[in-house]
Image (cartoon, rainbow, N blue to C red; front, side, top):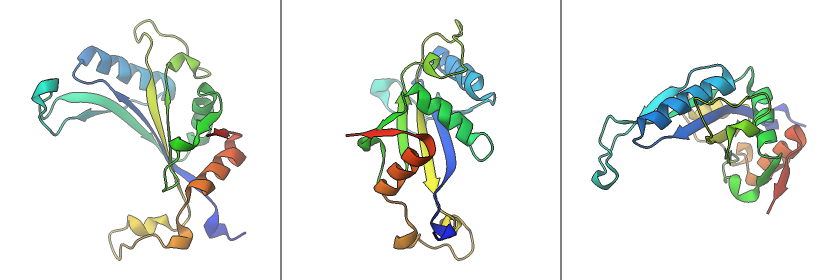
Length: 169
């Protein structure tokens, strides 16, 4: 097989949306720290939505992006919390995968913390092939050619092969 066609994990992003409740936000920051050992980044609003009580500059969530290193080990644990099952709807046409975990205590190796309570989080996995740098570089930026793009079916077969994930309808 051509080595340029090998799919790999580019990044895993953990996200917790708290809305305007600051206590939930603080618990979310602690949760991400407990799961990964790394502090997350606080996200802020850009828009004003008066009916929701949201104004620009208000902290509304936390996220953490993990690249290289511990990605496979972490993703294995997160998929185990989801029962090693994914639905077809959770794969997009670009070959990326997103799923939610309802309760963090389902993740192997994470103990219940009474300060956090019961919370969930969202996980997004970005897949890529070698050569995807051409869409991010500053000089001579280009689109990814059709033959190099990751299709939904490719992402599903990769997740089945690498993580023994069962894909359901």
